[in-house]
Length: 93
Image (cartoon, rainbow, N blue to C red; front, side):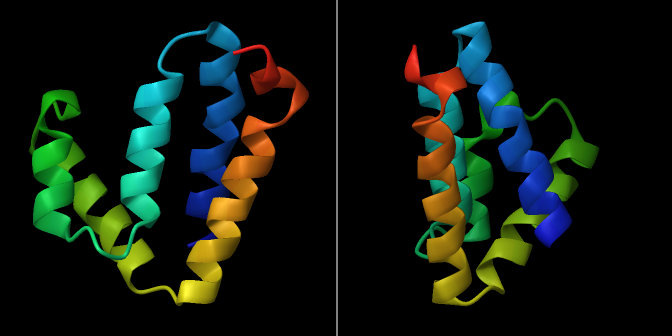
């Protein structure tokens, strides 16, 4: 779970640096760590970005990993997300 979170959040500054997709990436990350969004709603909201069944299965597993975490862990992931957004690389965007 920790590795998955690190890998997901590592891509965030690269997307911001490119100047595209920051709003979309923020929405996806927010939905991923939101415990009120269930797996079905998550997959339905991301349907336009899912090219096939393998991707859908991977996203389902990832969302389920976040649903299995405590509120404290999810709050820490959100704090990390905010720190990345306020970093040098994302500040320009």
